[in-house]
Image 1 (cartoon, rainbow, N blue to C red):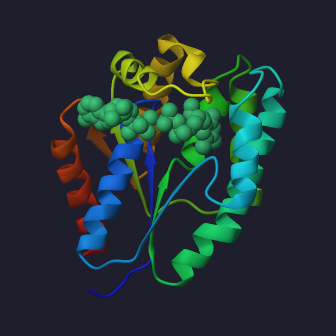
Image 2 (cartoon, rainbow, N blue to C red; image 1 turned 45 degrees about the horizontal axis):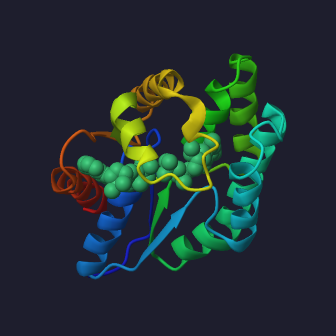
Length: 210
Ligand code: ADP
Ligand code: TYD
């Protein structure tokens, strides 16, 4: 089958099943003969992986909200330059576990000041990134279920998992509101078994490729 460059992101709260589904989708598309680049944020290029360690490990209060937005955006810019754009130019399917919608939610909603930070995220995105995925799969799950899944695989990157379920619930609502506004989103119910979710994900992507 001919390769078609396509840019797909997975979004959702912590523990929604994004990584699991991104991996299954990559496997399924490869089985159909597509060349797939599976990547993640923050990270996805050597420089962005360095920034990942700066933002996800260590003292959670190390960075101000503004500095945090700059760091996530800097990581994304490097990821885009070094990994995403070259793969799309080669005609590959790029699947990223999180992209700019995560910054809109996590940095835009998270800390008090609200509207100002959200505007800052969008402004910086326009100036420094300037692209959106062709398709965004939102794996939707309630905060409680997401939390109980996320803590089962906790490691050193506890920073955002420790936000608590109230904030994850606001984030879920925020993701759903974004999805209602932008046609690139497909919302998939994540509170089912892995295979049922994967089938819906593959159907959404196949429709986009057709
Ligand atoms: P995310 O990347 O969104 O944080 P993961 O894919 O890492 O989520 O999944 C979080 C945890 O939940 C993992 O331990 C994973 O094995 C498990 N998990 C993923 N999908 C499901 C599912 N549909 N049902 C039950 N457990 C799941
Ligand atoms: P990730 O490894 O995807 O965590 P999870 O598998 O639990 O979803 O992402 C790590 C954390 O980084 C996650 O809690 C969300 C956060 N994050 C932001 O706060 N802003 C961003 O722009 C991105 C991409 C991630």
